[in-house]
Length: 243
Image 1 (cartoon, helix red, strand yellow):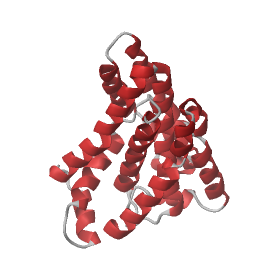
Image 2 (image 1 turned 90 degrees about the horizontal axis):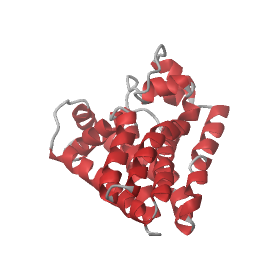
Image 3 (image 1 turned 120 degrees about the horizontal axis):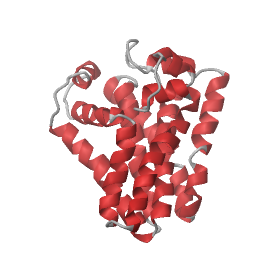
Image 4 (image 1 turned 90 degrees about the vertical axis):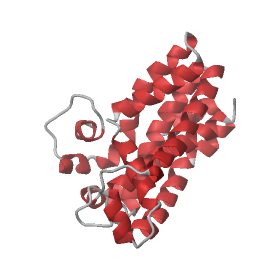
């Protein structure tokens, strides 16, 4: 886990390379336990603060724990999908440091519903909201892992390339099993909605693979990260239907 924490979080773990993280990538969903824990603790503030305030702080804590790394992917993919042109043109926009209206719109559509869902859950039960957030964080990484397990990099220089190479053969089977099962324990408090929440990761990963292939010619670090962020939002909205 240490190489993954070094690459995917801001926790003080150093001394590992990208290739080290790639070799441990079959354990990626477990990173969600560490980023989710930070947000879950902040959600408990809903016992004393308005639930909406606690929800904003909690999601912010989870994103900060990941270094806002995948939020940058949401911005880049949002801008790239608004571009008219072929996949090469869209990939060029992914690498552009400037932020356009497509990125800002994507940021709103991915994070505003997540905050609203967390606030609704926290109003009923901060503990249940905390469990849902951890489930969302784990499922987010599960969707990312599934994309890397079954996707093909759009470019050989993509940051996803060593991960795709590492998740092959027997490791793909183990990675797929963990990706599908890891969110389940944290979805149990959601009851019937938890059943639908459990399929969010594979369904959104399939959507991410389809969009990435058509828009960019394959997956990349930005599209993988953006798919993970979208998965968290969808799961939280689904779970909030039980409130």
